[in-house]
Image (tube, rainbow, N blue to C red):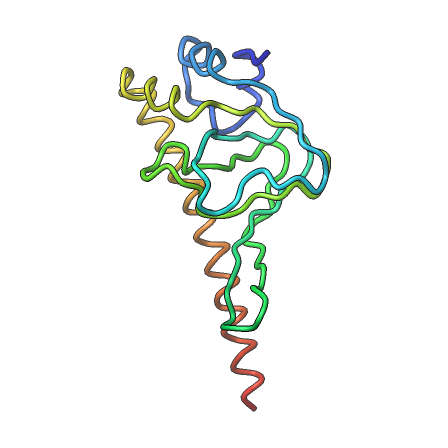
Length: 161
């Protein structure tokens, strides 16, 4: 069972009122996944917003290198205790944009995406606070993706010389 006090441990929920925390806790559950578990793949329906209680998860993107070549898996980000993943749970079209793979035994608070969106529809203050935190998560992922892209572009130019 997830409690409001449990949610207070996460920076993502730091600005929510006690009442808002209680509502979010009521639609959340605890999940545990072992090392090597593929939690979701790019293109899967975004069923939950996840907050990491313990463990480590890598978010990956497959880069197709052309016909007759296996895809290259690129790690976009590593998510650890206190961090959030699965922002697609509240952003249309509600489809995960990356894959999530546990590299350690991990535990999560999983908040049901449909119920969270319904809460956000009913409470504009809650919606604003959650979307502000979601924007931070998306910005962080974009920054990591840019770093990877620049690194790959730099390496490709080095091989030209």
